[in-house]
Image (cartoon, rainbow, N blue to C red; front, side, top):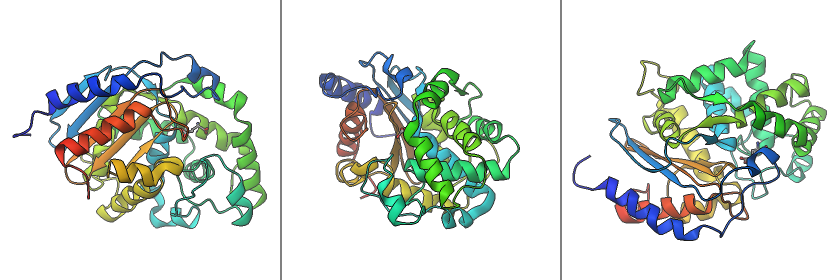
Length: 307
Ligand code: GLU
């Protein structure tokens, strides 16, 4: 990309946000995530022509957690199209990601695919389609990221399986409303593993290029999504991608994206680029403190938000 020194900008942003260390807390409710060094930062910006800029520990793997909900949604939509949206809604929830409250009022229909209840239903969709949904998911992520190094961190998946009482509660609740077709243990096994995908910022940024590129992989000839399907997923990221801080993220950053409690955030500008950040300390909503600030600085300096 000509005309702008992106490399220097990313380095300057890193220097600026590193002052914020200590303002957030690493996620501790999944014990395995607590063992991480909190003072780490990485950022990768990749344009559609694969021109790439990175700063910090951009090749360090981390647990992508809820960012995986975008991958499973993409895969489900690529298989059964708009029928996915008969199983999950597309409205922001305004409640914490693991809340049970709305489900009771709304008869077990999850508000959107990015709260836990919605993502568990999408895992169920994949389980009904594939004999081995985890293998299909991994192949898909390898294909769209251009990296076959991405893997499921078994220790993280196990740690969540042992402590994921709330997700078990959600899955049981969904099942009581007949919203889940497969056995709960099997559905949660898919869900816990997808959340335990270990990726680098470089791989994550590369994988999200699919959504910046209107549904077409830039690494293979596969067109997984139609432009309309990609547009819809991007709009759900815009309205529901940041727990109950989606409004604040739109206000500060102005890009569709998705965060995870591992401290990662991936965001895109349609037709232009994908950007991934990682820093493990989270704010009270579960979003990376340094990650959000870094993206705010980026769109402010470049003017590259969608607004
Ligand atoms: N595996 C996490 C959970 O279900 C994902 C949470 C997140 O990243 O939002 O609690």
